[in-house]
Image (cartoon, rainbow, N blue to C red):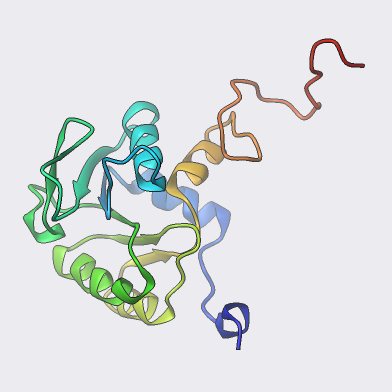
Length: 168
């Protein structure tokens, strides 16, 4: 059976995701990495430079990431994160969902490619909003303009295709 067939959970709509992002003041990135080749690093740099959120990094094997402290677990954070953005292996997701519940977070957000209905049920059962298989960076940029289809900020907002110089 493929992953698509097993998907029965329905995520929040675009307006609901926008409301989640508007309510959030702090984001904890679980599985944050200091490696610039990792998706979590790319998301972290975007959130630090282009969003209003207080960003915290959770990685038990790192002391600092992007010059900021890294914490061993959500329980070690100096604040209760509003949104827990998860970059972890599939089998780790229920445990991270439980940590998010225990930490008092409002939202569990599983990144692109992450889908775990048991983790979603656990978090929703405790009252958390859940978003799966979506990128916080892409969603934030999408709702705030300037997002290219590939997920990069082009600096231009418009519906017309951009012409490359020297081509007609």
